[in-house]
Length: 501
Image 1: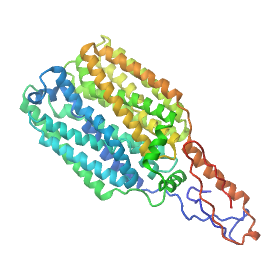
Image 2: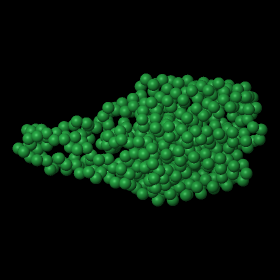
Image 3: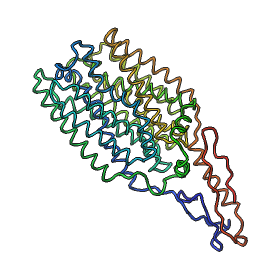
Image 4: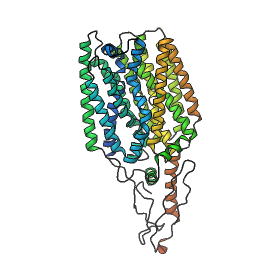
């Protein structure tokens, strides 16, 4: 039976073949071409949101010099204040994620993206108003708004993929959704050191910040308008049987009930903690990369940005390859464990190489590429693994919890690493981070591979194929029948209701 055939059917006399049955679609599945437009618009929003997360911290030493008059006097306090330009994204996510997920579950992807892209543009314009050495508080206010916009981005890719893409493309679509966010981080590493010179003259720094901030505000405004005009909440006909079943059950699904189901699922909690550790480690390295690199390679601001770019671009390649691999193999558990373990290897190599006295920056590029390929390549894998073991709960809810864990761990690891860097050494901070990532490998290995979404899709096909073989012959077809609705699996069981006449 084809992908587009339905769960409800009619027997039609005189039109059946050997089985005596003609299945007619009353509610079919269909994959729309415009799914790529929806994904592109979302990715554009995601790019600018992620860019604004890191674009000031990669030039942290320059930002400190420019805003010196409105920053605390102590050097550690100044560095920590600038760290909060990144950390505020993580801080605001924690209280905002529940109302944001309620919004996307109740109002859909269109409203989610309109609200988020509007906040993203508004925050960018506030940072235009913050041009001036005495206006650091206004700069932080703009970052708070941009951080709120990020709440409407980071947990959306698995939901968007499930709503718009078929079962053979959903992991790839999730990877591409995460890919947009990573492109934004890459641009945030690359562009600011080029636009803003590390000049002793405050006026020159201000000129570079002016170009950067006005350009960001203009681009985010255009993206908001495009989403306002062109984004559609969901297709009229769902793209897969799993999505059809999830949509049929969504009317009875309460957000609090769904949240309770997820946080009482022990294996999902383990996955959320392990995901938070590895993603939080990436956030910490990204936020503190300027300080780490300039300690070993003074005056190499542009190379620092390019090394950050290398980490992210390698991660984008890793995310795409991981998505294609998952669509082909469906081996979510062992793919997660393998990528996590190789991320630990990359972190150990980065720690050892940067501490060595080789003084060859090209080696750092190689190690950073290896680290990024696996560390940031893990992001969509974790989302998809969570969607599999928590089906039919909303993908936005499960990914929202994973991201909340990542934001919390990112704050803790960044603040902890900054304290250790200033009071002990950068080596001690990196060793601590390696130890934490090792714990994450163990937690990931414990998670049970309970692939519920795959089971739902497979059982629908099996039941429909069974019907084609057991229906009465044509000479006995005298009436119209309707198949009862399929049951949707709850958190502890698979489809249990038999599909009968």
